Image 1 (cartoon, rainbow, N blue to C red):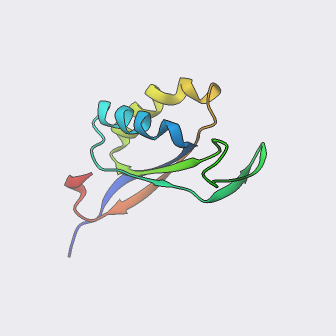
Image 2: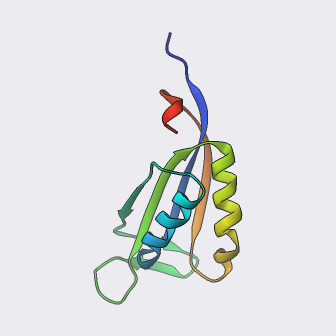
Amino acid sequence: MTELVHRKRLEIIADLELADWLADEAEAVGITHFTIVPTLGGKGAHGRWRNDGVGGQGKCLFISVTSADRATALINRIGPMFSDYRIVMDIADVQVLRGERF
């Protein structure tokens, strides 16, 4: 039977202009596999928003599966920025195949 390995799944929603910064911060703590996608819209504490390409309201979704140690390192590294920017992060326990890749 194929072995499942425990990892952490990170999902971060942030302003679109922070996409490169998120990628750099993830790489700085050893997270080498991630995906960043633009979002269409949503609703948060400040009401509804839509990514219409005008007005700078665009958001991105950063997704990564990584080890608990790397997830913690990223949280410690970017956590202080949460009060300055509109960033939302959730973390979930997942099981993956080919755990050595994450």
